[in-house]
Length: 257
Image 1 (cartoon, rainbow, N blue to C red):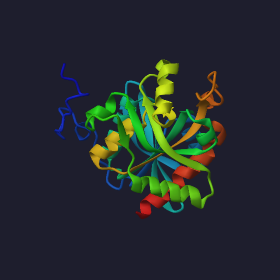
Image 2 (tube, rainbow, N blue to C red):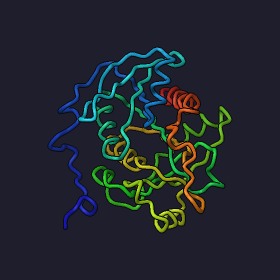
Image 3 (cartoon, rainbow, N blue to C red):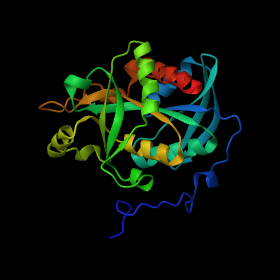
Image 4 (cartoon, rainbow, N blue to C red):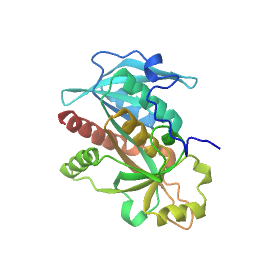
């Protein structure tokens, strides 16, 4: 069977392209920040000046794209849908609108508690246990983050004395199929956390030649005898200002590169 997993389509021009349905906006923010937590974005918009400069449309409804200002610089801000396919489509459309650099952050499940707990997690690479990335990048077990982008995040975190780790991420398509056997296999491969979009986002960024900074904060813990939900359903609200500040500071540093 000829599937995308063993037959990568190299043609850059698809039957339907983002620019076929998205009109480019002049003076669109060069750097866009995105997260998966609507609560974090809503709280930030309530406390800071923002204007809607575009919308991303789907059957799920419209997702506003905000223009915000931080440290005298203009940045973009929008919500990413959960799951690799929807997330990738949003990134495609943001790039078509005109952004040049992306910062993406969200929650993850901890797979190595002693190493990654209570720290910001930066991906060095991601295990591609999802399907979307294979439409953007040739088949491989994992996909690597761009070191120059990771270094920008590292310098930012160190400057602000925020604890962090760098390590391999497991991107899964199925939150309810993370079996004990698979979890142990991924831990043996060196994965320190699990989430649902990292590898696909990296693949889109590489395909479109757009630098991306990604970071994660631990929500639930899978490195225990029994699943620990912790603040998974908090959706980052309790520390949302901290995560947004990290993203904003990285955004300013990104603009300087």
